[in-house]
Length: 439
Image (cartoon, rainbow, N blue to C red):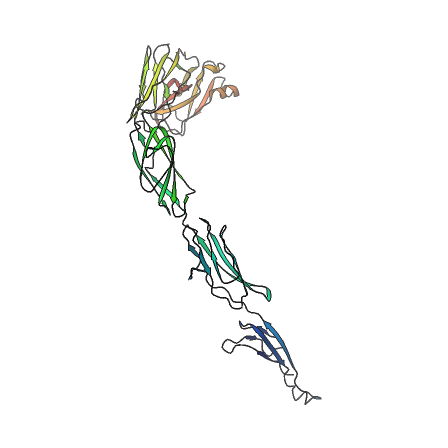
């Protein structure tokens, strides 16, 4: 028997439905985008004349009606009649707007979803919406037809609002004022902002006020004591300040060094020891003085750390003041004790010159309180060697890791060749020095 003949009825001639595998006993039909009924008619082929026994067999025909339910897809969403793709920037106000799409083929329902807080309701292709102040999000329309429950199409548009954000503040570092009458001009920059909120804390002042000020241009910053400012960008159209902030400190008057000088608990007679204070911003120099019989300031004058010593066994006092453009700080002082520290621990360091190892030999390995804490190594120019060797002598005593009972062998292979000074340190002070040549 010949192949089947298929006929599709109800198709558009301009855009006919597609028939695949025509002539076979089954086909695939892709219908036109129409709304109505389609018909499929199939006819059996004419029997072959060689088919003995049925030369006049008739052809057979079957017809089936197929309901076609087409739903179009919404186009780009329109804001006040203008279509947009992807996103739309909406001002920070609550003025009602009209959101719409062109009518969708065969759609009977339009469901709109809006950003949080926005209001508006409709079942048509156009909706009047009142935006919520400063909120943004996605507007989406979903279309459907009432006679087909699971057939939907949709379109959406992202709504952006120009919310303010602060970018920078000038000056970028903390200004210094010397009196309550002094002011420093400052400004801020940002995005989507026409004003800036300056909020002072502590002794800070904005345009002479201790309360927050919202201004469009530059401001005058002052202080009655140390303080700070928190700055936000502000949009008057949105009536909102930025969620991000910038902070600027302001310093007032002469420096305050704090109340503490850092030093060892005591010094050994004639041995140098470090004294220091915390660094303070705006200090241009530190002026150190020592008082007491035999007290000497060795090095570091003008900086936040110095070396001092006493040639006598007696207490002495170290004092420091800091200076900035406003004046001089109150002095900070510390009195330390000087002791006679007899070298009752070291016999010798050898070989000298040394190549790979340096041996340190002790008198009495059982008296840990006499031993140095560690070793610092300097070259002949007084510069510390980067790969400083550190030995914890107390641990060495506790672990009984001496060689021959009273020796420590120090590996110096990786040190630069030349003259070095080994400083034996205790409580931050130099207990003894040994000159060693490495070759």
